Length: 411
Ligand SMILES: [Zn+2]
Image (cartoon, rainbow, N blue to C red; front, side, top):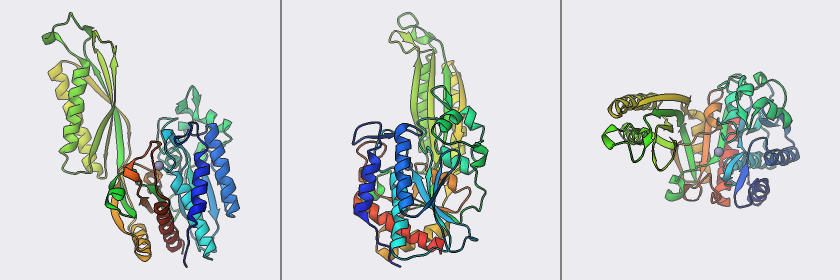
């Protein structure tokens, strides 16, 4: 079996998909259930049908395109990724795993391969949190990691997820979305690395062994405001300065966890009343902490809580934290890691084991199926920006490895 990737065709399809964007090129913006998302989905479905795949969509719009195997009694395997894009993003995040997954299937078809297990290509709804504030909406629901009441709870511009999905043509109860464990024998996602390692070290393929999981939370600091000229320095309870100390503590705590895999980011800082001549009375911080080791990550979270308490006392302010989410990290299935490495070796591609610091739909698929991820280099590790770039040869190598891994996993 020798699957040959049609790289020029795949590039043309990536080019076409990039035209479905709410911002002009090279930027790509495709917000879930917006007009461009729906047009991109329609385009993808025509390609799936052209490849003789049988398409079905679930109530949240997750799209499944099936290449039927010769033995329907065996659990299928799956690949796929997402096609939504955050505002002013690039053209390769997610799309390489969708169109690359399709090309892997077509390459196997052209090579005359007949899978024993069916192969599903999945396009997950709303991997990006842009519209509903929660990432991996589709895969979370598939893995029962999100309650179906989210249909009413999650909103965007005053409309519920249920209202928005039904205007986009996706109906039926969200309770029908979850898949039982065992539905898939394997899931493999192809994705750009979104980090600099493969590009810098000239490695063809990253074989993901674990996916770090984010915990995110808000910190509310309440101090005392006042006139910037009138309140003397010894009398101040400046909410921003307390928050600044907290942010510096978060950095220190993450750096002293004992592992380079611990990362913590204070990405949002909001001041009130945010006036140049007023001492800040309230400040809000949004913080993201990630690690591949859940115990270590949770220890970091506890230490941040303690730091908040200490700083609150010392600065005479009150500090309250509120969790946003805390997902467990995922570990990839050894059999899939092995299949990917063998495929690289057989093709003579340089490969390296690595962890994924960004989260992906694979984080949730790993709860219901043995999961693996194939990373390909992207220039300078740049992602979520219009400059995002993956070379055609790099994409083609990833697709070839995916095809070979699927052939092994689908038997
Ligand atoms: Zn992505």
